[in-house]
Image (cartoon, rainbow, N blue to C red; front, side, top):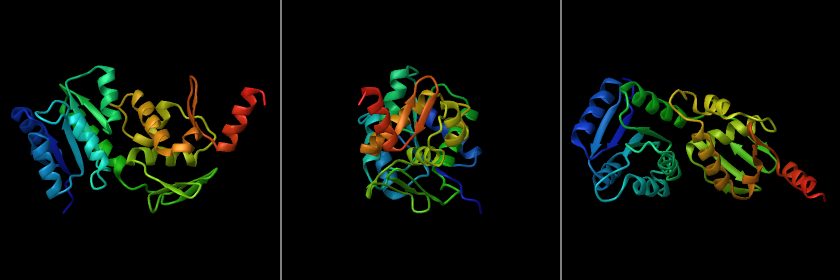
Length: 241
């Protein structure tokens, strides 16, 4: 029997939660409903879901702070989170992504959009089909063991950042537009905005620490991964040394 992905729906409005649950069931998912962050934590302690639909506005602890909390816990840090929000403003979307959400859905949304976005984050979470290892200027990524290190020091990356870095490393020194990255890393980007790429690149740089400078912004074109030696040479050339 085919595995039905388990989706934890954290939504305090019963009518919306019920509607989402019905749509998820018809879409081939197993929904689990929680009305607030306490109930959500109880469900997470019992069984880990494949993804979480998390409402921005919740009684007690907000969806935003719950997302931050889940990202800090080793047991839940890699579970895809989709923020459900009535806030369509850009700063709110960015705040959700910065809190650790993989994507956001603005209410009201269509059933097709909801299911497409859930499938997209689950695909992103799926293991990379090519279990190779790649090294660029001291940065090493092993897709088989899901490990990344820089100059021998192990680094921790979220699932989307891992996939983004894997693609950039396999195509190092080449400039990739945001739309190309959406296509190659996210796969199904019909509902995902290009701004999402910028947030994940920012998060990737932060996770890489000293190696973050290897991910370059090419103004008006996109992003490129280059070796630190090249970064140093470029900086030296610009300063005239």
